Amino acid sequence: MTESAACCRHKAQPRNDEFRKDIDRRINRAVGQLNGIKAMIDDNRYCGDVLTQLAAVESAVRRIASIIMRDHLKTCVIDEIKAGNEEVIDEVMDLFHQFG
Image (spheres, rainbow, N blue to C red):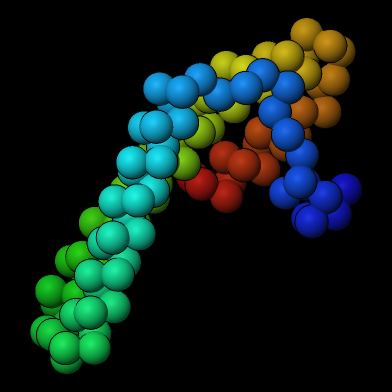
């Protein structure tokens, strides 16, 4: 499967509103932090301060990935294994390597 095809798949189970709102809030916060970092660079702020903010954004993005991974395991992966598709385990291992 090509990378572009993988990005276009849809979940079989819809995400609930609470989950989506939480992820949206977290992503919006990370985007706000990135915009703040851009402003810091434009304002010629101290490198250490910029790096501290970058570390905070990285942590926020990793947390978002962790939440989505957990949802993926509890929904998509379980559904695929129940349907007899054990190849999904390879996909999960690849994802763990990307985010591990």
